[in-house]
Amino acid sequence: MSIFAFDRSHHDRQGALRKDDLWRAEDPRVLVLGGEHVATTDGPAVRWISLQEAPEGEWIYLGEQHGRHHAAVVVDRVAEELGPMSLRILAPLLDSDELSLALHGVAMARWLMSTPFCPVCGTRTQVRQSGHLRVCSVDDGGCGKSHFPRTDPAVIMLITDDEDRALLGRQAAWPEGRYSTLAGFVEPGETLEDAVRREVDEEVGVGVGEVRYAGSQPWPFPASLMLGFHGRATTTEITIDEVEIAEARWVTREELKAEADAGTLLLPPRGVSISSWLVESWLREEITATW
Ligand SMILES: [Zn+2]
Image (cartoon, rainbow, N blue to C red):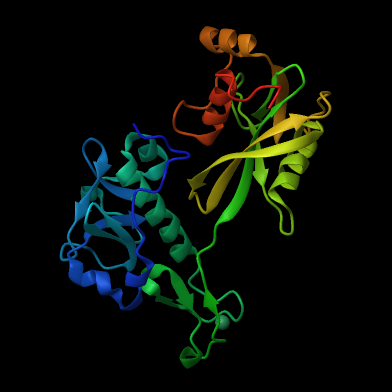
Protein backbone atom coordinates (compact mmCIF):
# COMPACT_ATOMS: atom_id res chain seq x y z
CA MET A 1 0.00 0.00 0.00
CA SER A 2 1.24 3.42 -0.85
CA ILE A 3 1.20 6.46 1.37
CA PHE A 4 -1.18 8.89 -0.31
CA ALA A 5 0.31 12.00 1.22
CA PHE A 6 3.82 13.40 1.42
CA ASP A 7 5.26 10.91 -0.97
CA ARG A 8 7.67 12.14 -3.59
CA SER A 9 6.48 12.28 -7.16
CA HIS A 10 7.51 9.03 -8.84
CA HIS A 11 7.66 10.21 -12.43
CA ASP A 12 9.70 12.79 -14.30
CA ARG A 13 7.23 15.11 -16.02
CA GLN A 14 9.66 15.96 -18.85
CA GLY A 15 7.92 19.21 -19.72
CA ALA A 16 10.14 19.75 -22.77
CA LEU A 17 8.59 16.72 -24.50
CA ARG A 18 5.05 18.15 -24.30
CA LYS A 19 5.73 20.49 -27.21
CA ASP A 20 5.05 18.93 -30.63
CA ASP A 21 3.96 15.63 -28.99
CA LEU A 22 7.56 14.34 -29.25
CA TRP A 23 6.74 11.52 -26.78
CA ARG A 24 4.38 9.86 -29.30
CA ALA A 25 7.34 8.32 -31.14
CA GLU A 26 8.62 6.76 -27.87
CA ASP A 27 6.13 3.87 -27.55
CA PRO A 28 4.37 5.29 -24.47
CA ARG A 29 2.26 3.28 -22.06
CA VAL A 30 -1.25 4.74 -22.13
CA LEU A 31 -3.78 5.14 -19.32
CA VAL A 32 -7.48 5.60 -20.21
CA LEU A 33 -9.25 8.21 -18.05
CA GLY A 34 -12.80 9.50 -17.79
CA GLY A 35 -12.93 12.23 -15.14
CA GLU A 36 -11.79 10.57 -11.91
CA HIS A 37 -12.31 7.07 -13.36
CA VAL A 38 -9.22 5.11 -14.33
CA ALA A 39 -8.96 1.95 -16.49
CA THR A 40 -7.78 -0.92 -14.26
CA THR A 41 -6.85 -4.59 -14.26
CA ASP A 42 -7.35 -7.09 -11.46
CA GLY A 43 -5.24 -6.46 -8.42
CA PRO A 44 -6.37 -3.77 -8.78
CA ALA A 45 -3.73 -1.92 -10.74
CA VAL A 46 -3.68 0.65 -13.53
CA ARG A 47 -4.41 -0.90 -16.94
CA TRP A 48 -1.74 0.24 -19.42
CA ILE A 49 -2.39 -0.06 -23.14
CA SER A 50 -0.41 0.92 -26.24
CA LEU A 51 -0.88 4.05 -28.33
CA GLN A 52 -2.37 1.88 -31.08
CA GLU A 53 -4.96 0.35 -28.73
CA ALA A 54 -6.07 3.69 -27.29
CA PRO A 55 -9.58 5.06 -27.89
CA GLU A 56 -10.20 8.52 -29.37
CA GLY A 57 -9.84 11.30 -26.84
CA GLU A 58 -7.85 14.23 -25.55
CA TRP A 59 -4.18 13.40 -24.95
CA ILE A 60 -2.04 14.17 -21.92
CA TYR A 61 1.69 13.44 -21.72
CA LEU A 62 2.47 12.41 -18.14
CA GLY A 63 6.21 11.81 -18.26
CA GLU A 64 8.92 9.20 -17.88
CA GLN A 65 9.15 6.48 -15.27
CA HIS A 66 11.74 3.67 -15.19
CA GLY A 67 12.81 4.54 -18.75
CA ARG A 68 9.29 4.31 -20.24
CA HIS A 69 7.14 7.21 -21.41
CA HIS A 70 3.59 7.46 -20.09
CA ALA A 71 0.53 9.23 -21.43
CA ALA A 72 -3.18 9.35 -20.74
CA VAL A 73 -6.14 9.63 -23.07
CA VAL A 74 -9.27 11.33 -21.74
CA VAL A 75 -12.63 9.93 -22.85
CA ASP A 76 -16.17 10.86 -21.78
CA ARG A 77 -16.62 7.47 -20.15
CA VAL A 78 -14.14 4.61 -19.66
CA ALA A 79 -15.51 1.45 -21.39
CA GLU A 80 -16.79 -1.26 -19.00
CA GLU A 81 -14.34 -3.86 -20.39
CA LEU A 82 -11.45 -1.62 -19.29
CA GLY A 83 -12.49 -1.92 -15.61
CA PRO A 84 -13.22 1.74 -14.77
CA MET A 85 -12.64 2.57 -11.11
CA SER A 86 -12.70 5.90 -9.27
CA LEU A 87 -9.26 7.04 -8.18
CA ARG A 88 -10.77 7.90 -4.79
CA ILE A 89 -11.24 4.16 -4.20
CA LEU A 90 -8.22 3.00 -6.20
CA ALA A 91 -5.63 5.42 -4.73
CA PRO A 92 -4.87 3.59 -1.47
CA LEU A 93 -4.54 0.29 -3.35
CA LEU A 94 -1.94 1.46 -5.90
CA ASP A 95 1.83 1.40 -5.51
CA SER A 96 3.59 4.78 -5.39
CA ASP A 97 4.73 4.62 -9.03
CA GLU A 98 1.23 4.13 -10.45
CA LEU A 99 -0.35 6.51 -7.96
CA SER A 100 2.01 9.30 -9.02
CA LEU A 101 0.98 8.94 -12.69
CA ALA A 102 -2.70 8.45 -11.92
CA LEU A 103 -2.92 11.56 -9.72
CA HIS A 104 -1.29 13.65 -12.43
CA GLY A 105 -3.58 12.17 -15.10
CA VAL A 106 -6.85 12.56 -13.18
CA ALA A 107 -6.03 16.14 -12.16
CA MET A 108 -5.34 16.99 -15.81
CA ALA A 109 -8.41 15.12 -17.07
CA ARG A 110 -10.68 16.99 -14.67
CA TRP A 111 -9.24 20.29 -15.83
CA LEU A 112 -9.47 19.45 -19.55
CA MET A 113 -13.06 18.24 -19.24
CA SER A 114 -14.27 21.27 -17.26
CA THR A 115 -12.71 24.07 -19.33
CA PRO A 116 -13.66 23.69 -23.00
CA PHE A 117 -14.43 27.41 -23.38
CA CYS A 118 -12.32 30.52 -22.79
CA PRO A 119 -13.39 32.12 -19.47
CA VAL A 120 -12.60 35.57 -20.91
CA CYS A 121 -14.49 35.57 -24.23
CA GLY A 122 -16.36 32.25 -24.39
CA THR A 123 -14.65 30.94 -27.56
CA ARG A 124 -13.95 27.19 -27.71
CA THR A 125 -10.27 26.70 -26.81
CA GLN A 126 -7.65 24.46 -28.42
CA VAL A 127 -5.51 22.04 -26.42
CA ARG A 128 -1.73 22.44 -26.72
CA GLN A 129 1.41 21.20 -24.91
CA SER A 130 0.15 17.60 -24.77
CA GLY A 131 -2.84 18.56 -22.64
CA HIS A 132 -1.14 21.06 -20.33
CA LEU A 133 -2.32 24.29 -22.01
CA ARG A 134 -5.53 25.60 -23.54
CA VAL A 135 -5.28 28.44 -26.05
CA CYS A 136 -8.10 30.76 -27.09
CA SER A 137 -7.01 31.13 -30.69
CA VAL A 138 -7.33 34.47 -32.54
CA ASP A 139 -7.77 32.37 -35.72
CA ASP A 140 -11.01 31.02 -34.21
CA GLY A 141 -12.22 34.54 -33.41
CA GLY A 142 -10.96 34.31 -29.82
CA CYS A 143 -9.03 36.72 -27.60
CA GLY A 144 -5.65 34.97 -27.81
CA LYS A 145 -5.31 34.19 -24.09
CA SER A 146 -3.52 31.11 -22.80
CA HIS A 147 -5.08 29.11 -19.96
CA PHE A 148 -3.09 26.81 -17.69
CA PRO A 149 -4.27 23.96 -15.42
CA ARG A 150 -5.58 25.11 -12.04
CA THR A 151 -4.80 23.83 -8.57
CA ASP A 152 -6.98 25.04 -5.69
CA PRO A 153 -5.15 25.23 -2.34
CA ALA A 154 -6.95 23.96 0.75
CA VAL A 155 -5.56 23.92 4.29
CA ILE A 156 -5.97 21.02 6.71
CA MET A 157 -4.75 21.43 10.26
CA LEU A 158 -4.06 19.62 13.48
CA ILE A 159 -4.53 22.18 16.25
CA THR A 160 -3.15 21.53 19.73
CA ASP A 161 -3.55 23.44 23.01
CA ASP A 162 -1.19 24.05 25.97
CA GLU A 163 -2.28 20.75 27.55
CA ASP A 164 -1.24 18.93 24.37
CA ARG A 165 -4.81 18.02 23.45
CA ALA A 166 -5.85 17.89 19.77
CA LEU A 167 -8.87 19.63 18.28
CA LEU A 168 -11.08 17.34 16.16
CA GLY A 169 -14.36 18.04 14.42
CA ARG A 170 -17.24 16.10 12.93
CA GLN A 171 -18.76 17.47 9.73
CA ALA A 172 -22.53 17.67 9.63
CA ALA A 173 -22.65 15.11 6.77
CA TRP A 174 -20.60 12.50 8.65
CA PRO A 175 -21.96 9.67 10.80
CA GLU A 176 -22.03 9.93 14.58
CA GLY A 177 -18.60 9.35 16.14
CA ARG A 178 -16.51 10.10 13.03
CA TYR A 179 -13.94 12.82 13.64
CA SER A 180 -11.13 14.41 11.69
CA THR A 181 -8.90 17.45 11.57
CA LEU A 182 -10.49 20.72 10.43
CA ALA A 183 -10.00 21.88 6.83
CA GLY A 184 -11.08 24.54 4.38
CA PHE A 185 -10.26 26.34 1.14
CA VAL A 186 -7.80 29.20 0.93
CA GLU A 187 -9.48 32.44 -0.16
CA PRO A 188 -8.02 34.78 -2.82
CA GLY A 189 -5.46 37.20 -1.40
CA GLU A 190 -4.98 35.18 1.78
CA THR A 191 -1.82 33.59 3.18
CA LEU A 192 -1.94 29.88 4.05
CA GLU A 193 -1.31 30.70 7.72
CA ASP A 194 -4.23 33.11 7.81
CA ALA A 195 -6.45 30.56 6.07
CA VAL A 196 -5.67 28.11 8.91
CA ARG A 197 -6.53 30.73 11.54
CA ARG A 198 -9.69 31.90 9.75
CA GLU A 199 -11.10 28.42 9.13
CA VAL A 200 -10.57 27.31 12.74
CA ASP A 201 -12.15 30.53 13.99
CA GLU A 202 -15.12 30.21 11.61
CA GLU A 203 -15.78 26.53 12.23
CA VAL A 204 -15.19 26.19 15.97
CA GLY A 205 -14.41 29.69 17.32
CA VAL A 206 -10.94 28.72 18.58
CA GLY A 207 -8.07 31.20 18.25
CA VAL A 208 -4.82 29.98 16.61
CA GLY A 209 -1.41 31.61 16.95
CA GLU A 210 1.71 29.97 15.56
CA VAL A 211 1.21 27.84 12.44
CA ARG A 212 3.76 25.49 10.88
CA TYR A 213 3.71 23.69 7.53
CA ALA A 214 3.69 19.89 7.74
CA GLY A 215 3.21 18.41 4.26
CA SER A 216 0.94 18.25 1.24
CA GLN A 217 -1.29 15.88 -0.68
CA PRO A 218 -2.74 16.27 -4.18
CA TRP A 219 -6.49 15.70 -4.11
CA PRO A 220 -7.69 16.03 -7.72
CA PHE A 221 -11.44 15.76 -7.04
CA PRO A 222 -11.57 18.07 -8.89
CA ALA A 223 -8.47 20.23 -8.33
CA SER A 224 -7.40 20.52 -4.71
CA LEU A 225 -3.98 20.52 -3.16
CA MET A 226 -4.31 19.76 0.55
CA LEU A 227 -1.70 21.68 2.55
CA GLY A 228 -1.21 20.24 6.02
CA PHE A 229 -0.34 22.39 9.05
CA HIS A 230 0.20 22.16 12.77
CA GLY A 231 -1.32 25.09 14.69
CA ARG A 232 -1.11 26.24 18.32
CA ALA A 233 -4.36 27.28 19.93
CA THR A 234 -4.46 30.58 21.82
CA THR A 235 -7.98 29.90 23.19
CA THR A 236 -9.81 26.65 23.94
CA GLU A 237 -13.51 27.46 24.20
CA ILE A 238 -15.41 25.86 21.33
CA THR A 239 -18.28 27.58 19.53
CA ILE A 240 -19.28 25.53 16.50
CA ASP A 241 -20.73 27.18 13.39
CA GLU A 242 -23.44 24.48 13.05
CA VAL A 243 -23.41 24.72 9.25
CA GLU A 244 -20.27 22.80 8.34
CA ILE A 245 -19.43 21.34 11.74
CA ALA A 246 -21.84 19.31 13.85
CA GLU A 247 -19.50 18.65 16.78
CA ALA A 248 -15.97 19.56 17.84
CA ARG A 249 -13.92 18.56 20.85
CA TRP A 250 -10.49 18.54 22.46
CA VAL A 251 -9.06 15.06 23.02
CA THR A 252 -6.01 13.73 24.84
CA ARG A 253 -3.95 10.92 23.30
CA GLU A 254 -5.26 8.50 25.93
CA GLU A 255 -8.90 9.42 25.19
CA LEU A 256 -8.41 9.11 21.47
CA LYS A 257 -6.71 5.71 21.70
CA ALA A 258 -9.30 4.35 24.14
CA GLU A 259 -12.30 5.57 22.15
CA ALA A 260 -10.82 4.44 18.82
CA ASP A 261 -10.10 0.98 20.31
CA ALA A 262 -13.66 0.81 21.66
CA GLY A 263 -15.04 1.81 18.24
CA THR A 264 -16.92 4.82 19.62
CA LEU A 265 -14.64 7.29 17.80
CA LEU A 266 -13.91 6.74 14.10
CA LEU A 267 -10.85 8.40 12.52
CA PRO A 268 -10.07 8.84 8.79
CA PRO A 269 -8.73 5.66 7.11
CA ARG A 270 -5.10 5.04 8.07
CA GLY A 271 -2.29 5.61 5.60
CA VAL A 272 -4.38 7.10 2.81
CA SER A 273 -5.05 10.67 3.83
CA ILE A 274 -3.16 13.68 5.09
CA SER A 275 -5.78 13.98 7.80
CA SER A 276 -4.93 10.57 9.29
CA TRP A 277 -1.22 11.32 8.91
CA LEU A 278 -1.60 14.53 10.93
CA VAL A 279 -3.55 12.75 13.68
CA GLU A 280 -1.10 9.84 13.76
CA SER A 281 1.93 12.16 13.97
CA TRP A 282 0.31 13.73 17.02
CA LEU A 283 -0.45 10.32 18.53
CA ARG A 284 3.23 9.36 18.08
CA GLU A 285 4.10 12.61 19.87
CA GLU A 286 5.83 14.07 16.82
CA ILE A 287 3.53 17.04 17.37
CA THR A 288 3.60 18.13 21.01
CA ALA A 289 2.76 21.14 23.16
CA THR A 290 6.43 22.18 23.15
CA TRP A 291 7.17 22.47 19.42
ZN1 LIG B 1 -10.80 34.05 -25.24
